[in-house]
Length: 423
Image 1 (tube, rainbow, N blue to C red):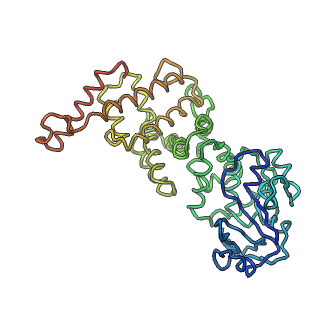
Image 2: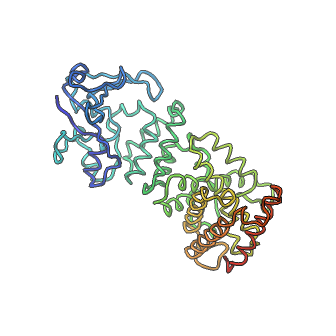
Image 3: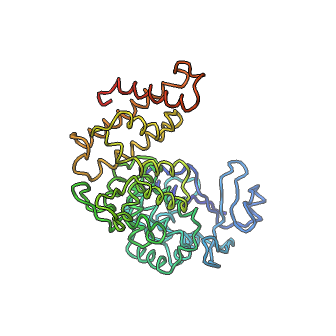
């Protein structure tokens, strides 16, 4: 029996990066289910040859081959007999850079059964291992996610294969949860998230799985507002600015202009606003109802779409009462447990403003200075207003709910106005 470490841990070691996972994936050759059980390993499931180590509880899988039995992502049968070598095991893996093996206990010997993994690591290329790649349609989305995670390009022959899988309609069999899980992972902090969207678009998967985002590509913008000339270019540039941000922020960046392609095609008035009217919110709600994002992400998407243009009017003579209402609306009435919504929203605004905009729209300052001022105004307003609670209102116990609410609003507006130098 021989044990190897395989997959992302080995790949990241070759790349000289800290592993994206603390867990190591182990594969075992020359053993059987009975032999593993005799050694005290606990089998996970009856049909899948994965075992938990009796002490560390780490997962060990028997080397195996896979054979597709249907169109679904999980339709496979497994062949795991003792004479399956790592050469055969490697053929079931997705990319050459993920098919590198390291004998357990060694931190220097790297085995490359495909003969391409080490070179592809050096070249920064994602290349599929073999034609069995096409048997799992989720690999289309995973390829785009790995491109974002590693900052790699996709080999031309692999891109051709991705496009073939899309054209054959294979993506329709994927569970929505698995698709959106890969999307969220691709939006992780420090990932090159724009690359995920680019790979998905280039192979045709974005049109199938996220048509609302693919529509950005042909949505023309005035270059005085967005130098890239399209909503697609603007969103990609904003993702670059927000590279270190968390997934909910990056996802909100992707969706903050989601109604633009619809509004520009169905324009009904000369000065139609494509950002924050109820039509835009209704459309966003409809789209998000079909996406398996978490509640925090969906809320931020709605807040960003509704307010990312309004908030800049603080530089353009916005009345203090409207400003206080805006910040209060974002934070659930200045609740401390909603402060994260405001800070996430301000990060979306920063990326939106700094990305590809030649000038700040409402401020005479540079976009960078305007963003900092906006952040300071918003946070100072929250700090002032969150300190003023209902109990601070004289005779608050004698006031009806609506009276107390109105008086609390009045006192907060007065306090912010007293501090206003903008703010």
